[in-house]
Structure formats: structure tokens, C-alpha cells
Image (cartoon, rainbow, N blue to C red; front, side, top):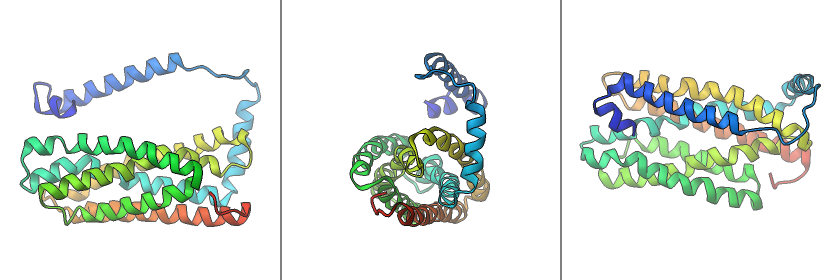
Amino acid sequence: MLNAWFQGSLGFPSGVRASASLTGGLMIIALFLMKPRYPMNGKEANTTVRYFRVFLQDLPYMIMVLGTLLTLAGLYYPIFFLQLNAIKNGINTHLAFYTIAILNGASVLGRVIPNLLADKLGAFNVIIPCIFLSSVLIFCTLAVKDEAGTMIFAILYGFFSGSYASVIGPVVASTADTDSEIGARLGVCFTFTGFGGLIGTPIAGALLSKSFLWWRPTLFSGISVLFGSACFLTTRYLLSRRKRTQWL
């Protein structure tokens, strides 16, 4: 849809506004449809503040939050620039147009299958290899030059990067000592994670520059996701010692 808007009569500025309006409208509908399933607690704000102070002293949790920030800072680089990279490599523009759709199609499987495994093996045990392989695939973009390689990359990266979006919730929940903490831990984590998504892709675009120096954003994004996987691995190690189990 964005491709059609940007390259059609709307152009880039109006296309961005139309996209923002569509997303905002859907979010407004979602806000009206949502409601709490429990009686409102007047002390809820104080509880959240208290939890936040506790979280700051929880080393495994803070390392995990850093991991989510770093991961999100680099994870979306291939999604935003895959089509452009394919065109620059001389791939037919009509085929390049569908690379994002192919990637998102594979992402559907990546959001379902790893979740089934996480229920049996543990969320950390699933997300760590998926994020690590995503970082490896980001570095591989420098070697992808033809149509077959681009399609294979889109499928593989869509699958492994998609797993992050679905398994990250159970990962955060795994750090909670009680079920009552899960909501607050998710809220605090995603507040900081959002900064990674906010700055990561613009930084990659600036590093790419008008000269299309692909190695620079690839290096930045690949290292960011690689360090993110290292943070998750460290968190898993600390939690396994605390909870005395490897099924995390």
C-alpha cells in the first residue's frame, strides 16, 4: 500500500500522512474497544512506581531491557531497505516490489511456530538463537546480489525476525517473580524498547547516505542485533542460576 501511495498520485509526504491517519484511526478504534477485566484499583499508580524501583535493581531484567532496545535498533533495517537493495542490485523492479510481502508472509510462520516451541522449551531458549540468526542474516545482505538470494533472504529473515515480535512477550514475563508483575514489567520494558525502534532505522538511513554505502548500516544493524542476543543470553544465564532451571 505504501509503495502504491509513494509512487502514485499521493507522493511521499501525503503517503506518510495517509498512513499515519489510517494507523491512528485504527488505534482509536482499539482504544474504545479495550476495557479492563478487573476492578479498578486506586493504588495502581503507586504499585507501578514501586515496581519500577524494584525493576531498576533487578540486574537480569535491566540487561534484558537493554537487549530489547539494541535488537529493535537493528532488526528493522532489512525490512525497510530490502526492496531498495534489490533494485540497486539490478533485480526487476516488479519482483523487488514483492520482497516485503514475501518477508512478511514468512514472518507469519515466524510468529507462530517459535511460540509453539517456546511453550515447550522456554521463551529464552527459543528467542536467543532466532535473534542470533537474524544478526547473521543482516550481515549476509552484503553478499546477496541476485534474485534467488534475495528471495531466500526474505523468507529466512522474515521467519527469524518475526519470532522476536511474538516471543518477546513471554520472554519479559519469564523475568517476573509473580504473575502480578507481568503487566508492569511489559510496560516498563516496552517503554525503553521503543527508543530502539525510534532511532535505529533513521540511523541506518543516515549511514547509508546518498552514496549507498551498504556496509555501514549493515554493520551498525548487525552488531546491534548481535549485542541484543548477547544481552538475552546473559539474562538467561543469570535467571537460570536464580530459578535453578534451564527451561527459560
